[in-house]
Structures are given as C-alpha cells and as structure tokens.
Amino acid sequence: MSQRYDCTDPDEREAGLKAAVDATRDGELVVIPTDTVYGIAADAFDPGSVRRLLAAKGRGREMPPPVLVSARSTLDALASAISDDARAFAEAFWPGPLTLVCRQQPSLRWDLGDTRGTVAVRMPDHDLAVELLARTGPLAVSSANRTGLPAATSVDAAEEMLESAVEIYLDAGEAPGGVASTIVDVTGEVPRVLRAGALSLEQLREVVETTEDAG
Image: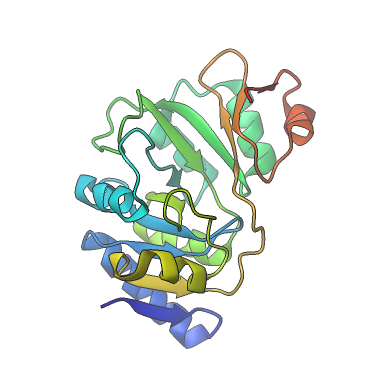
C-alpha cells in the first residue's frame, strides 16, 4: 500500500526521506519533488526497478529515464569524454532545469533502456530531492505521469495517475517550476537541444554560442 508524507512538516520530512531511501533500496518506486515537475524515481543500478518505472509510465525501453544526481562532481562518475561545453553548461545551470545527454562510462553496470551508450544527467535545484539523492546515490527519474498525460506538478496529480505502482509519495507542495527541464545533447561537436523546456535557447547560447536547436 502506498504511503504519502507531508515534507513541509519537519518530522514527516525526515520520516519520508528514510522511507524513500528504504523503498529505493528494496527496488520500489518513489515520487519526489524537483525544481521543475514531480518525478517518479527508481534505483538507477537496479534493472528491475527501472523496468517497473517504465511500466508505471506506460513507456518502453526506447525512452530511457534520465539520472538525477546530488552534486556536479557525480557527472564524472557517470559520463565519459565530457566536453568543455558540457562542463560549461553544468557550471552555469546546475543545480537547475538542464539535462545533459553524455556518453556514459563504459564500466557502469546498469540497464536504463535503449540508451545507445549515452546517459542523460541532471542535478535538480530542490533541497528535498538533493538530500534524498545524497542518501541514495543516483536515481533514474522521469516525470511523474503516465506517458501522453501532462507532467505532474503536485503529488495529488502524480498519485491520481500512478496510484499503487508507487510505494512512497513525498509531498513538498506545488512544484516551483512547473515546466520540464531542457534537454541538451552534448555528445557531438556542437550541443543540440533535444527538448525545449525551462531554459531557452537564448539562455543556453549565452554559455555556449554554438548551441543548436534540433527542433
């Protein structure tokens, strides 16, 4: 049976964090707040958990989830051949609403889906999410909704769509951003925007002038 914690209350916040850590370690799914929208999270290194995440969303392996981290330095543990442009973006916009698609470290033993040797990484700008990530390590996180429906900006919306597929719901109120992160592919010579989101092309070009809009 799903459990929900009001993380605006200090006591429930700590209880919710502990429950979320235990749930991810047990291979269960957790809904967490971020600075953009609510996310559905799983242990990135547990293939069964990632499969459950994709199933809960009604999504196939062709749409692997991004990985959220608690620190910029974790990028080096997950990605290889990190370009100067990628580092400039991370320095400028992390923590924040930017997801970077990088070449993954070949030594990683995980299965996020059909990634074609890449990993999408983001450091969210939300205290609760970062605290949870610091305790669990990297989590596979996708927007907390059924595929084709709007991303959830509240726990109520997430729970209505995902129901008992999720073990723990962490409620921190309305998501402050309300718009999904911008996704940029930094695996090539020129950064390319794969999904428009909270950061505009103009903001990205203030950091890396050559950024292209793939849309």
